[in-house]
Length: 474
Image (cartoon, rainbow, N blue to C red):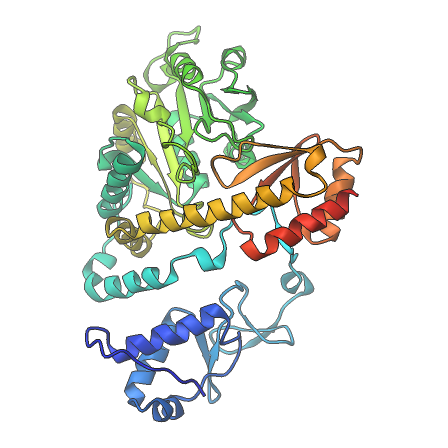
């Protein structure tokens, strides 16, 4: 039987205290998935509280998905890490109508890595569930009319204003909230840009670079090329040689190499965008070149001040700034945004403002409050501290291990990944295979160079992970 003590603080309702305590036990694993909760009456009697109090707590947990109910059987703890439904040991999933559906082996048997250095997800424990849920409840209670109102095409003003204030305070970027467009991930943002700028242009991404961007270009049937990078970033001459019109770039922290584009190369890139390489007399947007500046993990710089963005030094409206909350909150929070220069925002209103915003008003409003009420800044500070601890431990263990003499670590001062180069005779494929056989998932970005993304790695698994990597190369 559950046993809890409650605060005398009258400002926190008893049902909310009970809800929080049960939720904490679920999140910590104290109450395991699919375990049966006490009946409302028996729990009320054991805690000397009313049945209504227990019922309200259970209803809130039920609404947020922490528990589920089965007719005439009671309440059970959900496995919040699963996305395929409530499942018992027999591999049976139950839908809301309580109809049993047997999961296929493919659905049940997902790869389970001891450590996955390829994942861009965050640890479950890092998400601010408590504050997020508190804001959800407050919004549901106080903003019912707004929740039933359609968001503007470019997103809810409250969220755009919160993002604009954040960009000004953290990145030193002054933007008009009306120039911000909210999207559901990188895919929608870039797809909108292609429709806005045109399908008859040549788009480009960095090589190596963020592979998904190239796939998005392909999916939209636009011509696209890969532009090589050197130790300072994208090679400017290659942009002209390949007649590029639009370049997607990650100047503050290149993906995946981690290099930071120096100021000289940044101005060279801006100067390229100002040149008109067209041989035909054209007008409108086709007469201009643009840089899509992807600032995907700017929050995670561990030394020095944040690197100034290209957008902040562009005086000619050639930079389109974009960012996402994937790295800072969770990969499942599908909210991203871009900031358009004035003339492009005018074009957007003329051409594409008929679109509905792909992010729900509820999600937008929750994130807006999360930012504007100071939770986001505190969360980022905690995430940065936790990430630094992971990085420092991982680097220290590698440097004290047997592979230290054959390894070189680069670009570890920012972001949530670094590159490990290994001077080894073993082929990359053989090394990756042996690592995977020992439960370590890694990927190569070039010969003998491997990307180590540590955002999803629990701190207490890092030392054992390095031990297994050492065994794989021996």
